[in-house]
Amino acid sequence: MLYIDKTEMLKKKIYLREIENLFFAWREYLKEIKILRFLFSFLFTLFILFFLISIFFWIKESVYANVDKEATEKTLGALIIGNYGIKIFLLSLIINWARLRYLLFKRIFDLVISGIGLLLLSPLFLIIAFLIKVDSSGPVFFRQERVGENGRIFKIWKFRTMRENAEAQTGPVWAQEDDPRITRIGRFLRKSHLDELPQLINVFKGEMSLIGPRPERPELYKKIIQVIPHFSERLKVKPGITGLAQVRYQYGASLKDAARKLRYDLLYIKRRCWLLDFQIILWTINRILTGEGAH
Image 1: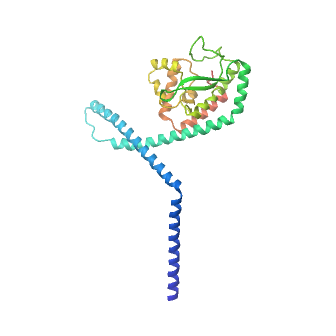
Image 2: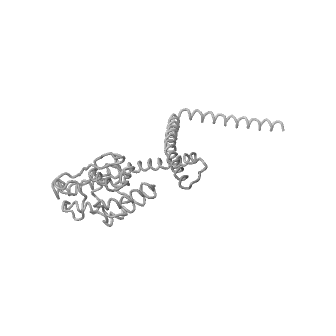
Image 3: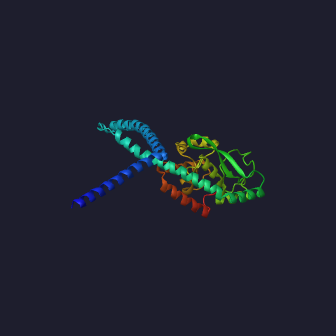
């Protein structure tokens, strides 16, 4: 009996020693993996940055909340008891985290799709370039200034669909249906939306996104904001190759059309999410296949 007890004790000691050795080995292994330290530092820095951004939005929203509270008290003729500051702060944490995560993954999605698209579509680009040169004189690509996010001006890339110097006499105007300035191959490119493919360059550079409000020309933008209130709200996001207004409304060729399309753009800015982006992609594919909305 004594012999059995000693054997069991010896087994327990060996077992505990193995666990201890395993623990020390694991600790040494973690010390050797420096990338984990870097990753931890990066995540901690990201958390601090996100926390500071949330505090900024909390202060901003708190000011608006106090203004709304005072206005409500005057309207009701009664005092509103309670402080909603912490609730706004917690809500801003959730909203800002979801917003930052959405914007981060959307940018990654834009980079991947635009990069792969430019590589895979390069043979098609060569064919279109050849057809444009055969059809009319002038450059293959058409670059034009557009108003981007936060009012920044950038040059958009498109396949040329009009005759060279088409606006020499008319100046900046909206393209119309059966526009005589459009070339034969240009008409096909517009109907199939293939003229928009070079904008993948703008997406890859970060000037545009795959999905968002269409960017306007600076000359037309100045005219629009004088007539249509809140049109500048579209500049809160990156412009896109396609957008909600493009798939739910006809081709815009006037200030009246711009005002109607603005409703869809503002709706997208307010409710943008992955599900809505996916729906817009499906609607865009349907429009390309049916040839709708192309002038």
